[in-house]
Amino acid sequence: MSVCISRSESSLAQRLVVLTQAGLPLVEDPWAWLAGELELSVESTLDLLKRLQAEGAIRRIAAVPNHYRLGYCHNGMTVWDVRDTDMPRLGALLGAQPFVSHCYRRPRRPGWRYNLFAMVHGRSREEIDSYREHLRYLLGDACAADDMLVSSRILKKTGLRLSPAAR
Image (tube, rainbow, N blue to C red):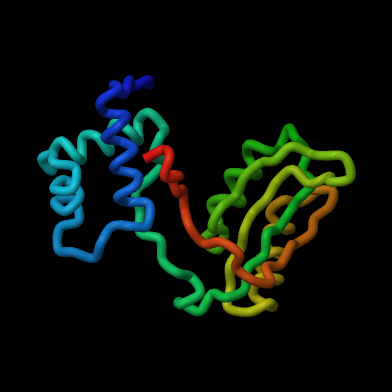
């Protein structure tokens, strides 16, 4: 499906991103707040959001909890060398696990054999190790090798931020 965003909507879309890039405010009706800031009706604001999502400019609108505050302070980016022919099925399988926050395919590089990445979060190192074991079981013999890159500290924890020039 292809949706065309007009020039005037493009400017509106940029304003929408700027207004929401740090999250929606904790108000009774965040859609009414956003509509007021954009000087649109709530219906027009929601319509714009739907069109931007259909165009692929916005992937999803969702609550993003701070997993550290919820006690999930151990993270590991599991990396896997998976047969390319099995990637569609196995990538979807890993991505569907409740302890995987994101999963994606990456091209292999010289000296780096891994092509499937899955971020896991847990309350302890032992928990993320057990998640890695479970993923290894799910991948079976389609996986030739794996590793886990463990987070040691947070360097950046934000979504998209438009530069002042883009505003």
